Length: 130
Image (tube, rainbow, N blue to C red; front, side, top):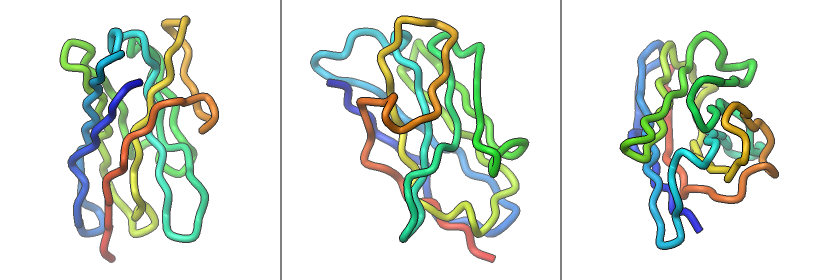
């Protein structure tokens, strides 16, 4: 099992930026580079929404339509960390943001569906005021 701990959430005005981090660890944790990583979010009363994903190697990425051009996902395999840089934030970006990890046999694949991930963090709140 992999433990994922998110940080970097908070309150920001519309148009501002935040950078989320997610650090992976665990007793049965193999190597961070074996996992494709993703970010999802859930606003009150709504389902969990795909935000961004990155392949094991970091070469390939994917984004949800609502964040394309504003958010950037990246990873540092040496530090077991994945990041989500969020720019030009909007009030509709307000949600709890979750980090997720998927053990993958393919270095270049990205995963955008909840069911493809089997490890989840506890989430970090992002609130964007208008």
